[in-house]
Structure formats: C-alpha cells, structure tokens
Length: 337
Image (cartoon, rainbow, N blue to C red; front, side, top):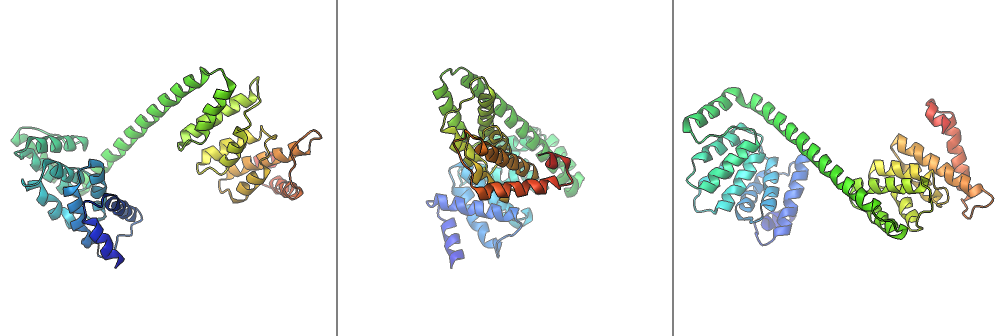
C-alpha cells in the first residue's frame, strides 16, 4: 500500500516536494546498491517528472534517480520525448540533461543525433552538453558522422574508461575551483576581522563563525581564537568558552582536533565533563590523544590553589588511569603525553 502511495504521488506535478524527496531516496538506493523491488514501476513517474518539471534543478533530481537503471533498461522511454515536437523545449532539454548523466555510449550517440534537430534551442543544448562531456561538435554532417564512427570504433569498454577519466578530471577541476574560492573568501574574512578594533565586536564576529554550518569557517574562527589566546591580551569573551566546549563533539574531525588543542591552552574553561565524555567515544586516535591532553590540563588547572573551578574526583581518577595506560603504550608520543 505504501509503495502504491509513493508511485501515485510521484505522478503528481503539484506534489513537488514529495517527488523531489522520492528522487533523493532513489539516488541513495543507487549509492548503497540496493535498488527497489520491481524498479521498472518507477520508470514512468521519472519520465513524467522530467517532462513536467519547470525547475531544472528539480528535473535533475529525476535524471539522477534514473541512474538506478542501466541505460538499455530506460533508453526507449528517455529517447521518445526527444523527438516529440508537441512537448515544450524545456521538457526536451530536461531529457537532454538526464542523458548527460548516463555513462553510456548510446546516450552520447543520441545527443549527437539531436544536432540535426529543427529546433535551434535543442541543437544548442545538445552541443553544449556534448562539449561538457569532452565530445567534439561540428555543424558539418560528414564531420559529425566521423566523430560518431570513431566513438563506435572504440567500443563501450574504452568509451566508459574515457568517460570515467573525464569525470575524474572534472571533479579535480571543480575541487580546485572550490578550494580557490574558499581561500579567497577566508582571506577577505581575515581582512574584515583585522579591521575591527573593538574587542566586543571581534568576539561577536568569532562567535558567529564558530557556530557556522561550514566547517571551514569554524576552523578559521578557531585559528583566530587561538591567536587571541596567545596574544598580548589573552582574555577572551566569556561567551566563547561554552561554544568551544560544544565543539569537542563537532561532526568534523579537524574541528574536534583543533578545539582539543585549543582547550589545552585554556584550563580556566571548565570543560572536563564534556571532554571526558567525548574522549570515551572518540574513534580518531590523534583527536583522542589531544582530548586526553585537554582533560589533563583541565584537571591540573582545577588543582591550583587560586583556581575558581573544580573537577570531580572521579574524573581526576579516570584521567590518572588514562595516563597510566598511555605510559605503557608502545608509541612514544603517547607516553610523552
């Protein structure tokens, strides 16, 4: 019954969010290599979404969902709308974008055929897609035929190998571009931060980035907190302490590592309870060792005569036991800690 409900919703253009959710779930099934039972039931709704969806980003979700099928399982249904002149140009371009995702030589050959289409927008979209896949394009029919013959001569195995190489190169390029833009943004952020003289404003600026959903911004803010802590005016805003304590359990491994190292410098923050809790479940060996160091620092600071914080005796005892274990470890750096 639930399956029938899903299939029924999938066919309803007005139920946009639900259709997108179904596509995302199907894409996840492809990643886990667990296709749905009787997956052919989903072909029709996928094609219908490609044809009816106005938003290209949402149509792309349908194209990605189509990847649970081998191309020969869905080729007829995908290719038929391409020659249906009763459909809008936008609908046909959605299909072209879906073909772009298919790692199959026949999908490329079908895109090449569209260079003969009578609709200029379709020709332009097909050529743009081919170029993005590293396939030469030409307005000359004989040259296009030669390109197609060369593809067929390679065979499907060689084509797939070339396709994978192109995809990996594109991923590397996108990754490099992303890193470049990230570096530029962080550089601009640093200039903005350095231009602020008021400590209260600086503290708020750091707090906003310490709780950012972007791990790169959290790491940037942690660097600035460390610089502040070891600088000539080491007194940090009180609000930063609780945020740092929460970051020891951050989902990002580098954030946890940097936070633990920072807490080693900040025994005045009463972090022992939270640090111990994370230490006992931490799976990364390097992070775990830094958490131990932060825990030791918290215990030491609490033991000082003028300390205004206290650490439970049980936590101190556990920390001493961890120290004993590290002293017996074969790795010298652990024994040193």
